[in-house]
Length: 188
Image (tube, rainbow, N blue to C red; front, side):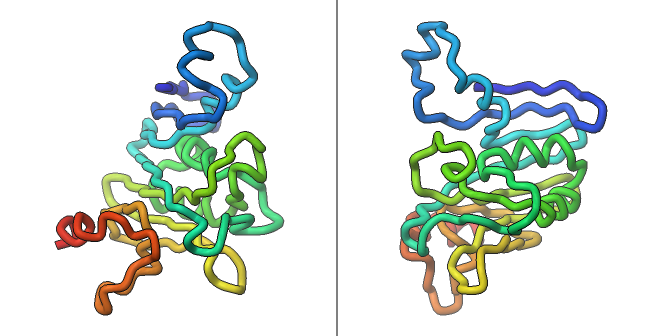
């Protein structure tokens, strides 16, 4: 779904693509039957850009290879499901730096734990950019001290594997690192 959001008091106008939702099939859409799933579509942007020039893209990583799903990035803060983060940031941030600060101020939790509608086991990570800066943000659920955001500034390539688990000097990557050759070519 293409979602256009108008500017309203305290929120930026944006345009983006809503991600797939289990149960919202082509048949359901073509039937024109109203479903409660339509109420969450506008909040589940996979990619988008706002009126200030902040652009965000998401990518998915197979979470089962690295110890399971993120439960909390910042316990005790306002909980937002991974797939709703893009919309939240586009609504409230004007720059990539502001988006990073907002991410640090919320508790990003797994989609299934918040909405109960997403059955897949994956992590979402983010490429966040404006005219001045670019970041890749990965959710890190591999350390015993808890899940955190791994923020990489000036990283302009986002992959379907974790960059923070890669050691390019030793040529090691996360277990599910498909596309390593493409990454190396892009990085070079």
